[in-house]
Length: 40
Image (cartoon, rainbow, N blue to C red; front, side, top):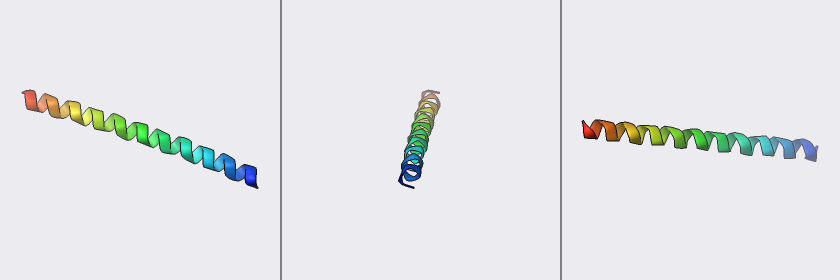
């Protein structure tokens, strides 16, 4: 039972890290878009 909980917690942490990486990627993309619009 405890082992199952540990695995679930580890998977949750991995998916949370993946979500943070994706949002960071999106933020960089929107910053680049903003700079392109600003430079036009």
